[in-house]
Image (cartoon, rainbow, N blue to C red):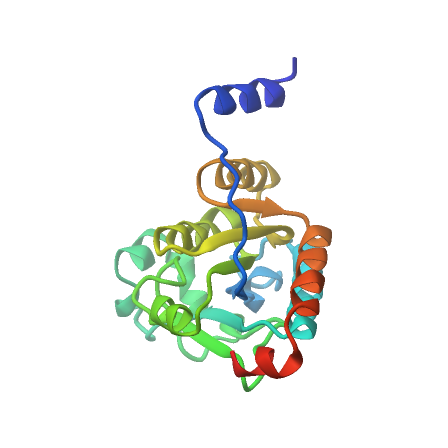
Length: 222
């Protein structure tokens, strides 16, 4: 038995890894698709270009299905004072201070005018923002999650989604991290303790089935 098989068996024996069924009202959250992670001139460059391409595909699926789209970004004051302990712990967050080009959206991943932008200062898209209230008011029960990075803001957002009562579905190909082992370990842990981890093909099938049962006028009102 391989190490990963032993790990899987241990988690199952411990009663971890129950299945969450997505609801009937999904939305997409793209977490921090910032130039910082794909620009080699930035200290936060993470070599996540394949994940970025998958994020573009995921975004296209969501828009075609007509589900709500939320895109998050980090914006900090010039001195980082609103970043608190997080800024002190991760000084490279200065890439996201006001006016930095590294904080701009990656080409093709900026929200459309009718899509929600959530500005945050901490890892989770929920912490200190109105996201939970917005989703609740819109009747959302399921979040498809893509973005950067898997071990940081994606994980924190998935955790808070679960804690607020939304079913989190992290899209495997559409998230990335600077270290592939850390990326894989976090996906494994998210899938056993927090939410579901789906491949992008499964997400496409889910959205196609969902859109087939919702007429366009209903989708646009949500």
